[in-house]
Image (cartoon, rainbow, N blue to C red; front, side, top):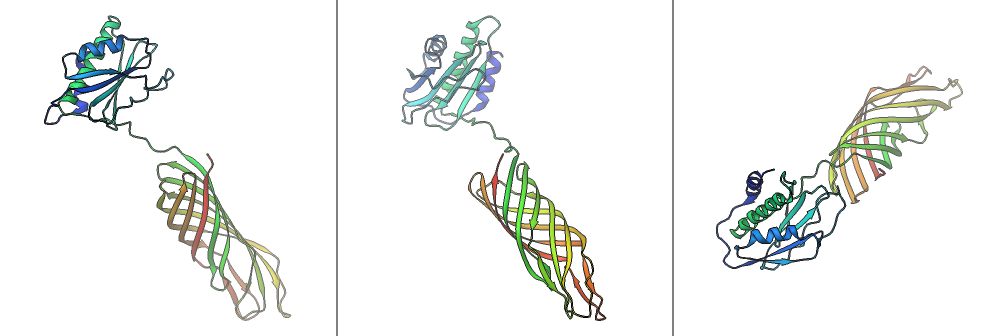
Length: 328
């Protein structure tokens, strides 16, 4: 990279302001290798003539090769500090220079490749680059480059366990159970989940009949959702469910004969909205309300001449409250 191209990039990264500084300011200079004085000497030579005082400082910290730029220089917060400059020479011969404005929260980091004519050209490019930045700061500019924009958080696997309640039929009433779920945050706020709900056996008396049926349910569900990662955030889910309902006859009147047990599948879609609260990053609490829509639902008939029936509801309200933990 030529010095001209580098200066063009550096000038574009520094915003210009109105008034030049009236008094000399201090530049704090450090290198990760105190025995390598050539970069510091080059910077001092190019800052000569500017109204600044260059002060040596201890190294900001040595990093291993390939671990990224050195830690930013610790700039003083008093009005006398214009900037803090750190330089690291890599084994390949390239130089990493970071400049932090005094009292500022941003750091400008530049990589200077070894010049084709040797280390002298590299040091010359370093000195010119630092002088350009310092001169712009003296004229009232600011280092305007913050750290890299973070990408979406990585995918997360987790588990949830909690309460689920639903109205299976108006003849049965509200049914409560335990909800177990595995979820995967695939990208950003989007997630998929697989859940199984355990409901205890429930006895149902058919209207106008002496028969008592016992129903055992085994609902499973796959869902996709919008669940942002935040301390408090809304969430919404859409799913498809299937429910294997096992029916047995617990009692009948004297004039009836119990039939054999049977199992029937119900299936449908679901929608739920709610809120999530994360007291700590890996633990989150959820409260949801929604509806289950059954496309196919079981219907039980007692053949006693009266036509007593028990029909499972096609539209079922649902409430959920759970605690989740990110496990990976």
